[in-house]
Structures are given as C-alpha cells and as structure tokens.
Length: 113
Image 1: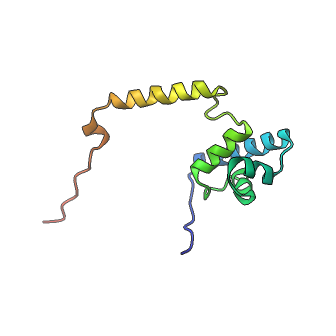
Image 2 (image 1 turned 30 degrees about the vertical axis):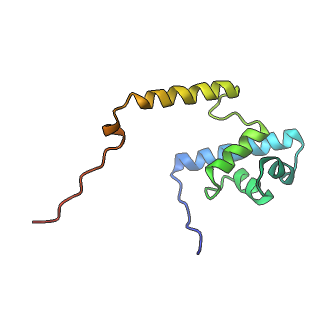
Image 3 (image 1 turned 120 degrees about the vertical axis):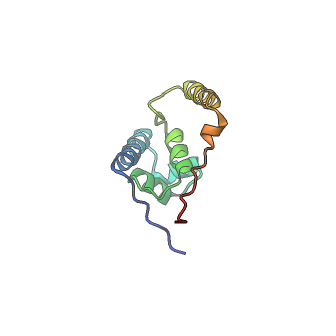
C-alpha cells in the first residue's frame, strides 16, 4: 500500500517548517547528530531528518517527542510544569461544554424529493 500525500494548508506547513528548524538548531547546539537524537527519542535518523525538513508525513507524536528531547519549547512554553497546567486548564474548559454540543452529529441531508 502506498502512502497518501498529506497536503498541508499554508499555516500548518509553516508551523511544520518552523518546528523542524527549531529542532535542527537545538540539535546542533547540543552537538548531537541526527542519529544520536533519534536514539534518544526512540526514532530513526530518517525520522529526525524528516522532522527537520518539515515533512507532514511524520507522526505528531514523534515530532513532539523529538522536539521535547532536544529541548524545543512546545507552544512557546519553556517550563514543562506550565505546559501541564495549560493542558489541565484546557481539559477543564472542555468539560464545561455540554456533551451534546461536543458530540453533535450533523443531520444527514435527505435526497428524497
């Protein structure tokens, strides 16, 4: 089975390239090779290089793990505890939204005329 090409909208493509560049800069500042970063992150050298090039085919989990391992601040938050507090706050806000709004199913369009 061939891999499907992922077409990113401009904003998402820019974000992927920015994250990749931040990873590359941080890796080079650490003096690590792509192989070393991959070993520390549990991914292959190829995956590290794909992240650094902004490839949309890399899983979100792998990209975030690599960024965190090399020390790239996620969501412009440098303290992991702050990131955790933001996550909890957002999850609490989600619980305030009624479940019938969160799980709303759009009615199907009837084609019976």
